[in-house]
Image 1 (spheres, helix red, strand yellow):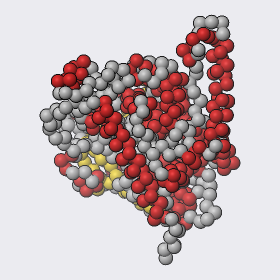
Image 2 (cartoon, helix red, strand yellow):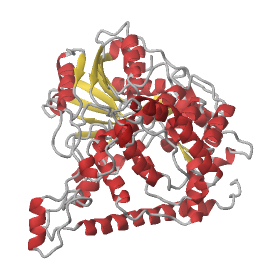
Image 3 (cartoon, rainbow, N blue to C red):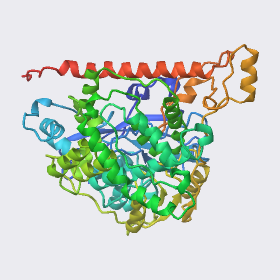
Image 4 (tube, one colour):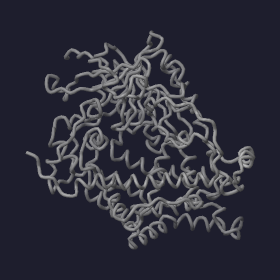
Length: 611
């Protein structure tokens, strides 16, 4: 075996592009040279970047490596301390925390692929551009090599054994590492697991199907708070409030099947009668066919070509399946539109360009942007079916359910048409592990269904701890019970199988109360009338109220210092908030239009190939 190459330590401000004052205490940055092909250690080399935060006690009990998932998620800030000062007790004090940036991403030799290799008959432009540019390097983007690169960094740091925390796709890197290097594997935490047998088209398919089920949980959460939001007292009624907005979106309606009807969805005359159950069975039994027929009617009317709303509500809703903490803001958006808030729109030409952008890749191919497709297509077990992809897309364009048709397209290998797999998938095996892993998973995880966790335990052994709720990513996300389970395992190696509660269900955004009404009256403002406008928040820190939550399994980079708050001004009225939201949405629409035109304008005419 070749000797480990030393770490090339670097200035973090230059490597990460972060000002020194915002750098986490004790952060170190470097790169390690690794083989492009591990079967040819004397051949071509590339570099992978790493960050390390040394244990603040000066006496590290272990080095804990970590990865946030993807494939393709930025890993170098994985261990950045939380901005609010909270962190699992003992994590930063007792452990060196290391993150390795997978090859091909920022800092780890990303590659821009030459579009000159894309011909008029190319079945897959990404494949042809990148493999044409550097076939050996492209073939090296695999989960196995991500694990091997992590081992190379371990060797360079002089560590006999490492602990590990992997989230989502990071669990696949972890299971590969444990299988390849069991003698170097310490205490491994696998959080929100991918399924070892589903790499990767089936994983994407099952995730899309699980997201549709999770959407019904979102609608149910809003319905349970109907006295607050007034959007409907059943999931089905909330769905129709949501559908009224999303039916107007650029690209056409999502045509989802509504949640199952319940007694409160029936006319009063039928409730509690002998006809209640047959009526519900009829409604629910025919719902998929009716949704499909409605979708076909909309498609024949060419509604997808005439819609021009750009609220982003559909994408925000699907994104909210990652974390329940996003649901109050989603309900906030939905109520705004249902109360008559202005729906931002774009002109028809821009709407057409947005649809085109959604259906095609960027004209520039970069490995740090396209890594998800690159890795999944390099090693997906099932060959792609162009006919299957075409059938799924035809179903969608003729009014099919957007999530189930997406699942069908993913199952057929949508991204990977014209791309033959070049890598093997490693079947996890924990027979040689001295320490079996701790496996965490939310019971309703809609991104990586819990079947993946059960399969990981079957193949590696270990302890399964199920977390209540459906959040994707459970450690270091504000759940003290989960953090305690993980830290006990990292400190002692002890883990007890069972279930812990998820984070408490979030509260709706604040609304006007008696104190705010009295203050408004004293200031000569018209206090809001109790009822429809009652829910609007009175946060003076609008940025805090509207800032998006970090992606599951990730830690945000340090933010700039916040200035001292100014003296509070007059309380805003609901009308003020309506106007602010309307302006923000108009700004978003304008930015979308400008961005789309900026992307497409330079490429209106094909550029001549460069010599």
